[in-house]
Image (cartoon, rainbow, N blue to C red; front, side, top):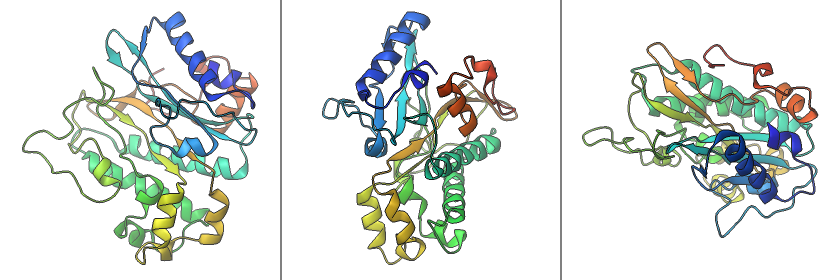
Length: 292
């Protein structure tokens, strides 16, 4: 919330990383971060592991940029992994709002469906279905959503997995135990870091996203099985948009999930945080499974 409130066009991405690292250490006792912070603005927000030494969070933030900040503190050797997305100038454009709310709907649908016994790959599929439904509603896709699922259209816009186990490592071990499910070889599915059924007490991230990556769009437009679903004229204006990801850390309970993350997850809350109208986490919208 502090970083969101202090972000201004004209700043450098690394300044946001610096603010975060100081805040979690000074106020939370997190001497280390759990991983190298990703602070991507504009097209950099579609680079999934941006922020490393070869691309060190050094772009200047533009007025109309969408920002994607994936940052987590490490406390007593335990990792957190949280992503927030918001507009640089504090106000969503119509397109930014549409993509943000589509990703929010993906996250909420997954968390509503989570409980012991549900397979994580099936929830990855659910996130793809919601993405296709919302992008179709917005006019970026056309055709049957069932047919889109069969053609794996969701992977064009979310080429990574839905989430991963988290604990003593950001990407914690145990996602594919010996004798368990084999990794799915399809694009997007192959990047899923957990193939297990959920169990009471599991800690896992829920991190759906929608990205506009030129390479993947070009490849999809050249694929006769995928291209018919894409509305080229509508997608054209999203070239350079970047992406939106929302990532929460949750614990599976006997009848659902407990959400350990309390960040702005609605358009109204994001804009209110950035305008200074919301100054406390208790003012944020919370779904029933969120632990205050």
